[in-house]
Length: 261
Length: 266
Image (tube, rainbow over all chains, first blue to last red; front, side, top):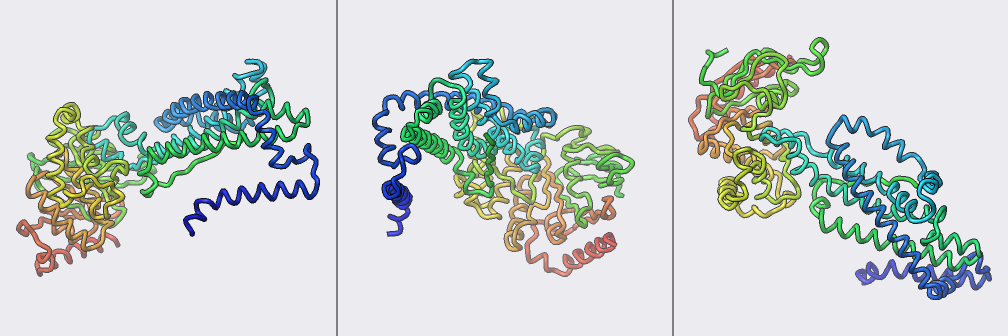
């Protein structure tokens, strides 16, 4: 019995929320352009499916490209900063400044440079996803026990040996934890850029629909974004579990930090 | 101090360590002289904060002395040694590697081994198994560190320190975090290993029974700034057993050293 509740509990909650929502809309006769009922949203979702698919694909594409760049850049800079105290001191203020700037405010500049379309979305996704990866990789490298470093150095290990044998493996859990945060932030970045300056993508679709008061379609877009977010998060969580299972058993606790949009 | 022995394997002469700048820094070690013969087992005891751990890092070349000279195997130490094995209170195993791969780690780093490790992997693995057998862990070669008890981890740590057959083994309170029974059991394991392989050991501890049980010579250090105040030879025959530790001679020696240390603490 308990097992069944564990398994179906979440779905039960979702289903009952939707039913409650539907009933409320019916009873209080809420107009569609204020709050559409779930049935209306689904109807819109089905009706516009081919169009939504095109825009969803665009959003997924910019999210993933931005994410890949964020992973590469974040790993590179994270390792550099974790490796060298000098680089850490030099880059730290810049990184903090970079992270403090609201990324929405940068989108207009990106539009000036790259025009409306795909590049601003990719770059915004990159900017949001980049920081947590840098911070976590650097933090992971910093967790190497000084005694272990002594052991290795007394064997004649170079700094590179220590990085490869100990530093990178021990920061792997931090890195994979950061991926979960980063991929979701990349999606946020893409959608933000699309709502400001784009002619394609779920963000654009929602903005466009809302200007026509097609609120069911706005909600349909929202649901598609949510589902995409959950799926890519779960993929990253799965990769994390597969690669760094050892970390969840040991004493190492994994922290992750989220940046702001 | 004792007569200078030209054959000494580890030799410290008038060594000071000062943390911070020379004028206002904290003096951790002062005028330390130490002679360790090849193949001998010495222990350094003293109150906490007396610079014992600084001494460890100094001998292995991980920190440079502020004054004085250090020679190991007749060569001045001016960088990490490359021939030492180290084990600490904390076993510092790599959690993502199983026992076998953990103790193979030194072979991936030490100069003579890293080149032919791939070719001779099987041979080295056999050696690792043999080492694990001597510490009673043969059946745990494939276990992950989190599956081992504290005492088992410390055994693995000891094996890792010995895997590359170092000439010098540095132990920094290796058994301090273990319960009394496990600790005494591991004294036996370490003594057996040392008697078989006869590497040179410097053991830092503040357990006097441990120091006397294991070593041939004990250096007592004063508290900050650390200074070696007494050298004491331990004449009991090897192998020593736990019941030896309750014999009158042994107990008398413990008491004698304890009195020295309490004098030093004042």
